Image (cartoon, rainbow, N blue to C red; front, side, top):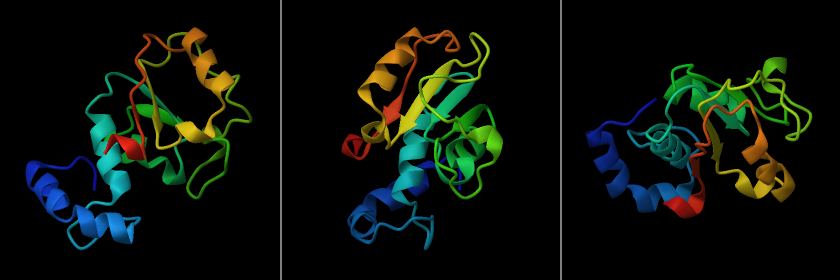
Amino acid sequence: MGRRNTSQKVIDFITFPFRALTLIETDRWGMSSLASERYDHVAREVTGYCLDIGCGKRNRFVSEFLPGNGKGIDIYPYEGLTEEHLVNTLDVFPFEDETFDAVTFIANLSHIGLKSLLSLQTKTWLHEKHIPSASPSDF
């Protein structure tokens, strides 16, 4: 689906109670999934080349909402991820200095240890300290 237009946002607003109760995983019946809504929200905040930590199935955020302007990584081999998406730990990443302009954590902060999260502030591969995030409580 990609980025949502104004008409889609109105439809999603009206159908939110239904979407929240059914928890549809994919966009269907003219409605956005809650994941698509989150991705759209975060994509508006991202500037520059982005690292999506905990990218999940098919690296969807980077491939659909940032048109490839970033890289998704995960520690779990979800469907659609290749070896280049997988890392063994969140403590050491194989990236050059100042590779990324932004880092995203979309609905996964609760799965990341506090030590790993705090260590991101000292990473040199992040060009500027811009870390947008979205969790279910943001909506």
